[in-house]
Image 1 (tube, rainbow, N blue to C red):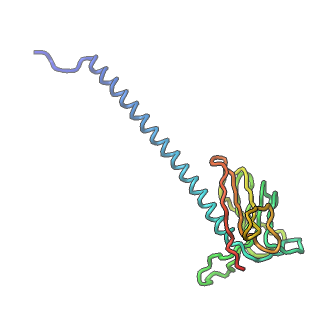
Image 2 (image 1 turned 90 degrees about the vertical axis):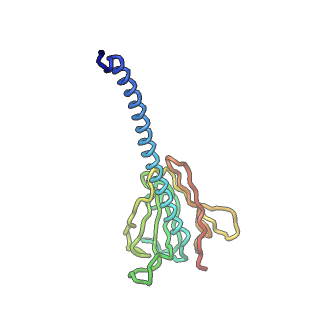
Image 3 (image 1 turned 60 degrees about the vertical axis):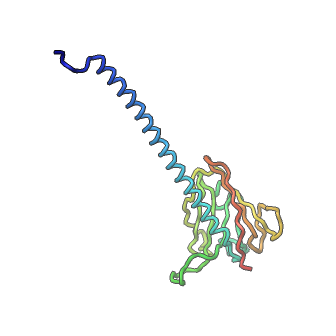
Length: 200
């Protein structure tokens, strides 16, 4: 009676088939892992973009009709904006915003806050001052909102019913609207228009 078992050829064929299946499974698994990593990075990036514009919306929509004395300058103005100010590589801006959250006035601070924006080394940065009229040569505390930024631009609508946008905010009052634009290395230009909730 013959012994039942596998021949060498059958074993080799089985190993070959198993190798093909294992290789295919590995490629599918590797592709799924790479897809998950790419998706995770994109989700994180989109969250970063969303957070940046949420903070900008909160600041620019609540520009306050509050003039400030800038260090070393006698004149008062509502907004200081332009190219290459505040050490910016592109546009920079500084103003006072209102409606800073202070529930029940529990914190020892005003509802006004002096903020600044600039582009520095590919980062859009937001600065916060300790006081409305800071001590001379006292810089704001800068924090990075978003990285990978190549351009930062601002335009202003100075007339309530006008459609034209200006590079300058009119002296004596806050604008009716602000066009806030950043150009990202990965997503290109993103622009938002914020209508200012004026308190007049």
